[in-house]
Image (tube, rainbow, N blue to C red; front, side, top):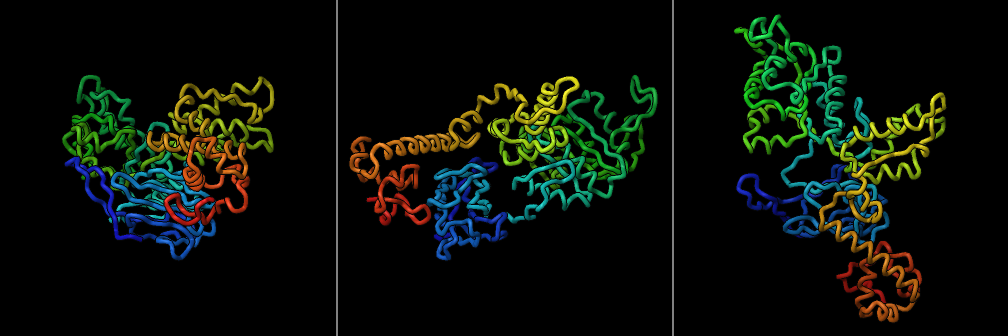
Length: 477
């Protein structure tokens, strides 16, 4: 491995790039927990001579090469047996962002700043309370939730609408020592701003027009249990310092009362906004934000964890399909190819609608393959591109998606070319308008393709040991 290298990321305040030394960390697999400083280039493989050697038998001897560039990490697969992945997208050569999850065979890894300390290992569980997920992203969340459930620390849950933020709050409450106490949800977006203080902290009779009797607020109703402050980013700015005082003192002062009242409440807040950005704009108090994010959990969108979809579908349709009918086939392919702008909530509603419309009055349950999924216009977005061009990652950056599309074209073009001129690279190169050397370099870069066997024994490229296009050895002749 070359000397420790850095990547430039945007500075938080000045806006200028700042050098960040990096490391590679194994998240799961036989080498879980192993990490090493990342140099300008790093070869990953099972060969002990590799810069980062792994013991996973699914990892090739020379599996992948990581190159640190100024604005990202270039990941290049070295014609490995079981592939190199960014997330769940198989790549031959692509740029990855800092923090992206990589997979070499069955080993998961991540590129992180050197200063970042891994707090917990991914959980072995596939569920936590009402939450389900087999993906690495969800198992990392389960590991955090399992540890904080028994404490009273404040938790901030971020994520898009429909990702299951309130399920996190309910599941934490159910797994905590407060499970027998009350669980109260306060929706900050559903209460008029002029009534928010009264609804949150309560009021005394006669405190304002219409206050005909004393009323306990959400914090008082949650005494001894848990309060979920849903859509916290919508809380009026003038109420935020009052909420901060409650979090610090564990006391509420109902509207119209002089004396505060003690409350014993665990606080879990959720939001679909970027509260750090809101604080920078002056719309959210930084001191309140820092008090809330003692533990922060970011729920991933469903489009970023498609491997969870089959299990979610099976759970949602449990007992509703004919005996022995397992979700799969073309209908499952359609669900896997959709972008899910509404996340898990949209999936649940889609399945409920399909089941209701497919069940005739007095009839038995429909089979999964008979369900009709009206996926709507969102299916015409990136997921449709990914369906038509399987090599393209859903919602990938433009540069990466374009590179993957061009590679898919090269695969199709040169497969057809080799079928047309089996075993004759000279004629194939002439027909393609390329030099023979250019053609052999391209074939090395692409690796084994459908017609590679037609080249003859002395022209084949080994799937595991062939060198890079830039190497001198292993050239196709």
